[in-house]
Amino acid sequence: KKPFETQEMLTSVKNSLNRATLENKNKAAESQSAQSQKVESTFRFLERLNAETVLRKLMHSLLHFMQEITGCEALGIRLRKGDDFPYYEVSGFSDDFVASETHLCVEDLSGQLERDDIGNPVLECMCENVIRGRFDSSKPFFTEFGSFVTNSTTRLLAGTSEQDRQARTRNRCNGEGYESVLLIPLRTGGKTFGLLQFNDRQKGRFPQKIVEHLERIAGNVALALAQRESKKALKESHERLKTILDNMDAHIYITDMETHEVLFSNLYGRKAYGDSMGQKCWKVFQKDQDGPCAFCPNEKLLDKAGKPTGVHAWEFQNTVNGKWFDCRDVAIPWIDGRMVRMEIATDITERKQTEDEREKLQDQLSQAQKAESLGRMAGAIAHHFNNQLSVVMGNLELVLNDLPDDAENRENLFQSFEAGRKAAEVSQQMLRYLGHISGRQTTINLSDVCHQSLALLQSSLPNGVTLNVDFPDPGPFIHADAGQIQ
Image (tube, rainbow, N blue to C red; front, side, top):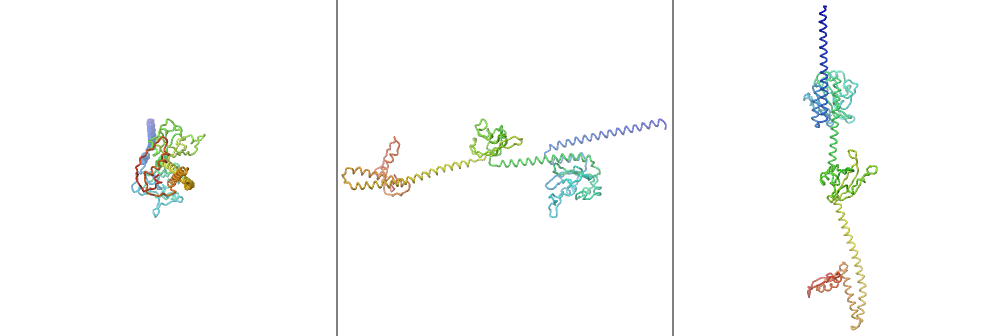
């Protein structure tokens, strides 16, 4: 060829190479930009994953994000609900597909769930392998993560059997024309929360790098679901415990053993003492205290090594409300590791009042028993005294009968006899009072009976007291026992 034609050819080749190089650079830049956008989009989603508190919103965001980074035609999220894993969020599937495929559990003719040998419900289709973690990563349609992936369902069904696929497949995805199918488990710590499903009618939609990227995202989602479940379980446990403590008919509270700060007080305590959280126990639960109570049991709850000594039981009358409490104190480790004091104080005021009343009644009974004993002893003495007095008076009466009326000692003996008779009347009165003998009612002059009692009454008065009387004469006549009146 002519020299100028060769030069022209070289120039054309050079320009073609330059254009190809530029196109490659542009494609690399576009690929890098797309990768950067994908990474940035992933970070944004992970931030929302940690911040979102509403599960429905979180799953909706996950579905939208997955569709954004994959451009996949149809997506679904299955979450555990009892024994089943129904669709929780879907996009791109027909209503008929969702209605027929939403449940995975197999029911027998009686409508009961079929279960395997270890009691797990039988799930249909390839989803069961993914959910149960039953996979063989040496097979081309399983990954080491436990996902199922195929870029051609037609070729998979033609080239494998149900035994190869380890499941009874319903083949609905292939029947709907979906060639590319990806199922990724939402699993962490050996627990499966559900799975992510990607379907597309185009073949070859899930190369290995895309699958690995989606599996990493699924791992983060499963971890977030596990954390949500743990927080929910912790919150429910806290609420159950709080409900139990708030319904206890006792004051249950916890204080720091060094600062005496109240860390917890149940409803009983809040009603009795108000909101005490963060306050000093000796300020809010007692009064007139300028420091820790002298009766504080803290030192009895730990040994020299700082180990709990067990339950310390004691009774105490509260200085705020005056009520008596049966207290049970124990040292326990708090959530941050420090030792705290927990007290359960049960109101025993009624029991204390009952005990006091019982003691009073016991004292009264004891006094009554003493009085009864004294009464029996006094009755015995009165009987004995009366018997001895009868001998004396009998002898005096015999002597008086033998003496002449003008005898020198007759008057003295008669006065002795009258004194004995009066002493006998006193003894009779004592026996009547004690109920040992019954009286005799007659018509008596009340003024005379009162006059006869003056001597005994006067002798019982303290020194310096003068008794002045004014009785009618004659007094009123009544029908009564003179001894009982006296």
